[in-house]
Length: 118
Length: 111
Image 1: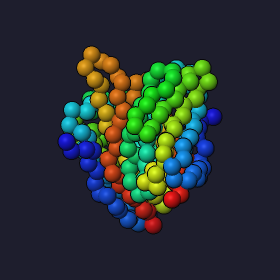
Image 2: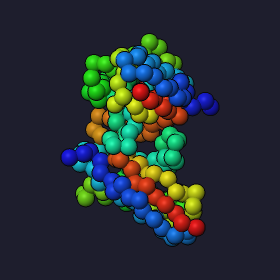
Image 3: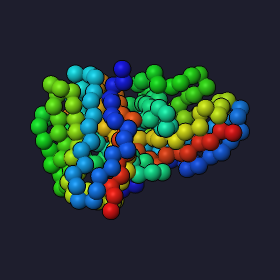
Image 4: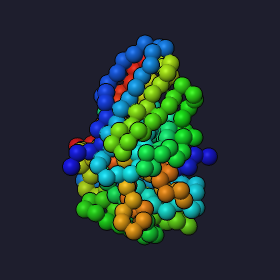
C-alpha cells in the first residue's frame, strides 16, 4: 500500500515568497494532520482535518499559514509570505477510525518536506 | 507545562544491553500511548502502542504504562547499533485525534 505522499521533498526559497506544500494521505484514512518539526520545538501539530473539514487549527502559528483539504486525497499547507523562522521539516500524517467507531489507531507520517527560507 | 515530557538524552548504551526510555504526560484523561522511532533525516515510524496499565511486549521491545503515575516507558532488549535513533513518545488525549509528541530521546548504541 502506498503511504502518505508529500511534495516537494526539499524546497529552498527566499524570504517573502509563497510556499505551498502538498500531501496525499493513505487511501481510506479520514484524518489528516500537518506537523512541523524543528530542533528547538520538536514536533508541533499545526492543524488537522476530519473528512476534509478542519477540526483544530490552534497550532497554526500565524495568519501567514493556511491549510486546505479540497478532497479526501489531497491537502495543501501554504505559507505566505515565508520567513526564515519558518525553516523546518513539515510532515503530513494520516489516520482512520476503525470499524465501529473505535478510535484506536495510530497516525502514519509522510517523508516530510524540508523547507529552507533564506 | 508541556503535555509530554522526555529526557532529550543522548542515552548511550553498549551493544547487547537494555535501553530504557521514559516519558511522562500531563493529561490524566489520555487514552492511548505510542512510541515512534525516527532515524536522522527520516520521518517517525510507529514501533508500539499501549492502552492498558502494565507491560506489552513485541519482540525486543516492551512498552510499560502506569496511568496512576502518568508514566510510559520503552525497554529495548539486546540493543543493536541499528537501534540508534531518536525515540518519540506520543500521547492521544481525550479528543480522539489530538496527538501530543514529546521532544524525543536520542539513543546511541555503541558496538
